[in-house]
Every structure is written in structure tokens, then in C-alpha cells.
Length: 316
Image (cartoon, rainbow, N blue to C red; front, side, top):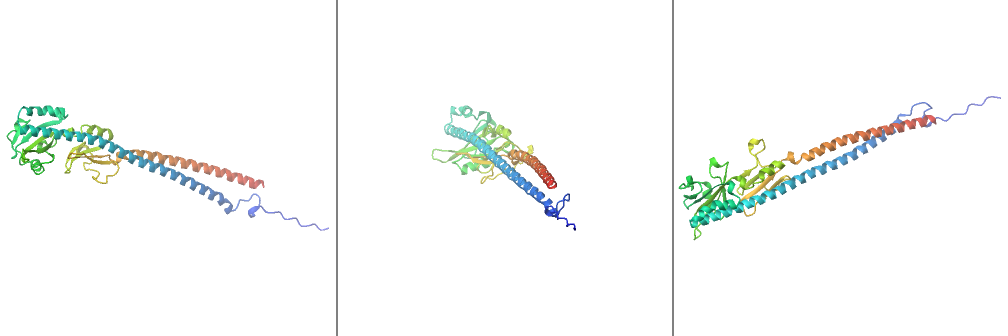
């Protein structure tokens, strides 16, 4: 009896026999899955980090804006009080000159009551021709200031206080505030002027600027800078960083009501964005660590899954 032919043995799936490696297509499946998972994790981490960095940047801008707004409000109140005190002192001086008498001796006491005493550098009154008829500085009596630019400005604008510099040699130490004296007929009769240390206008500005790294400046309405918390020699940019309109965050410009003053504050960008830069470094480092840990975990997980798949294939 002839022997029958052996029955065929089914080949393993994929055309490979036991012990042979899987086809390239079979190997590429887990690789593509790993790449897709890594891409999803990376994208998710990027979205979270971008949201954190954006929030930190906006927070830094809000802090800068709140800081400059609050400081400007405080300094504007100081400048407003100084403007009112100067106006009272000038008005009283003009009244005393209209009727000379012992009241002139009380002007310095009045300046003390107005909290201008320590910063007061001098009071002066002139006639219509610019001749000095009253001065706390005896050396100035009998002089003439008609050629000074501020005197001409007061004559041309008798209804407002004019801010000027008294003399080139004194410009770094004091500012001059002057207003017109009018006679009984309302005609120009001369000027009254007071010289003050600029610190009198905003006594707390230097401390505030030092504490918060602010640039603080006070301008006359004509654009002349009256006071600044730093000088160009300190290594900081002497130019104003923002315009008077449409100021960016970190710049605040406030006019002082009923006065010739405008307060301007600027928080330098490197100071304003310092918290954002610190947060960005922390977020960037966290992103790198989280991405490395996630990819390492995914790699180990997929390698273990691939090992188990191969062991299962050999068992079958």
C-alpha cells in the first residue's frame, strides 16, 4: 500500500515561518504609533507652556501699568499741592507789594506754613519796567530783570503762572515761578516770583523712583523738564521713553489739574519684563524636563509592548 503524501502545515501569519523576523511593515507599525504619541505629547506640552508664558507676559505688563499708575497718582497729588502752595504764596506776595507794610516780613513765615520753607530759595517782586523792588536776597534789590525770557512771558500771559529758569548759573539748583501783578485798573504792574528747589514739587519722587526703579519726570506745560529723578551721568537713557499720547504699558503721563505741570513716569522695559523673563526660563526648563520624561516613558512602554508582542508570536 503506497504511503500518502504529508499534509501541508499552515504558515505563520505574514508568510514567515517560526523563528523568522517579522516583515518591515510589521515592524514599522509600532514605530509610527510611538511617533504619533510623541507628537501629541509634545504638542500638548507646547500649548500649556505657551499659555503659561503668555499669561506671565500679560501679568508683567499689568503689574507695570498698575505700578506706574499708582505712583503717578501719588506724585500728581504732591505736585498739585505744591502748585497750590506756590500760587498762594505768589498771590500773597503780590497783595503785600500792592500795599507795602509789615506784612512783607511775614512772607517767609507763610512759606513755612505752606511746607515750602526748606526748599524756598527766594522771593522777588518787580515793577512794570522789571526793576526789583522787593527781594529776600538784598543783593538783588535795585536790579532789573526785564531782559529775562520769563519776565516777557509773564507780561504776555498775565493770567497764568509762568515757569522758568532764573539764571544759567543757578538753573541746576532752582526753578522760578512767576505771575503778573495787576494794579487797580487791571493793568500790568510788575511780577512776583519765587525760586524753589525742584524737590519741593514732588518731595517723595526720589524715594519712589529708587524703590521701584522708576524714571520720574515733571514737565511744564510748554514741554520744559522741571524735575527728574536721575541725571544722564548715571548711565541711564536721558530721553523720555514714551509719548504723551498712546503711552504703552509701563509709561504713565498725567497732567496736574489747575497747574502748569505734567507728571510722567516710565518703568524701563528691562525692569517691567524681569518677572516675565524669570517665568519664561522656569517654564522653558519645565517643558524640557517634562518632554524628556514623557518621551522616555513612552519609549519604555512601547519597547515593553513590542517585547511582549514578539514573545506572544513565538509562543503561537
